[in-house]
Image 1: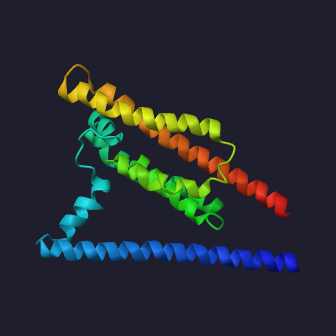
Image 2: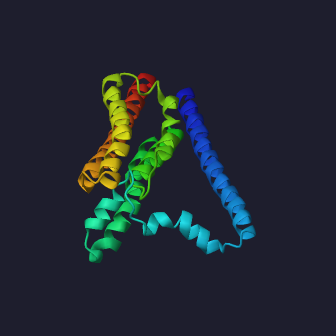
Image 3: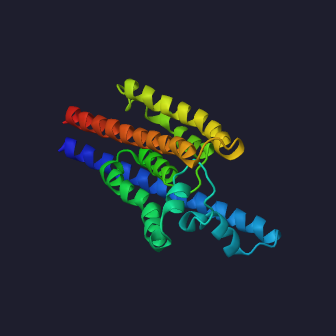
Length: 220
């Protein structure tokens, strides 16, 4: 009886924490949109213009300038007839991947779910930057106890981040400035950047799920 009551209380506390987190995120989004609208209205910019140029850009990806993402290469090489389909697939693939993570860990690890969602959005972003990676990497130390035992693979992931970040400007210069390389050189570094982030996501999800399973067995 006491055990069931304790589990029920813990479950309610976790649900309340998840609701508070969602409310906190929605509140900040509404506040930031309101501030942006106030600033843009003073500059004479219509609401739909700045919304399309910021939030809407992800869903149309009209600018295919080379960057750390894979959109520019993929959509440059693709036939226009398939553009809308693959644009839809790229935009909603992070949502599809987040669903099982939220279902499995949403009640116990809401902050980790935010970390995974942010990471996947960066991986499939049409114009990612190094600053975008800093956004989810800042949350990584929060899960250090759950990621214990993955130091070996973590070292390889860190090496992938460093190598990709160092090679990308070099390959860019060889291709754009010096004209001694082609697009495949720079695309190789962007592909390595994407694979490294995907490996980090898979590693973290595996370790957190394993930690949750072990903790549940101990509590039982």
